[in-house]
Image (tube, rainbow, N blue to C red; front, side, top):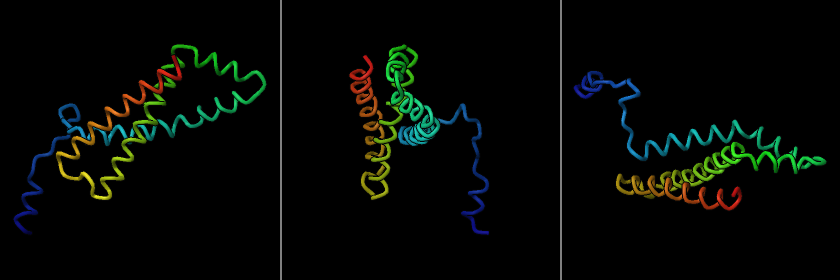
Length: 130
């Protein structure tokens, strides 16, 4: 066994999830995955609301659901999940093309994804919901 393989086996492992401190690109990556799963799981809800809105008198019921503060928060969360997933997806496509792959650029693009997705959520969500 080579010396490098021995060193790899002897390195310490931190399995305590409370003490792991991810860098910003790692957090954006996890948020991208969580937003994708959230969008996938909420797809039946979105389709049901859409179908309900097309039925007789259903549009007024959907408007009442959206007018509720809890309904607004749920829709705002869905808007954020979509926008974050979209912006982070563009970032990951650029990284796949080896654009911005060095560490300073990756950190800047991760911060930019968070800022753009939160700003677009505030603008679009504020315009549509309030």
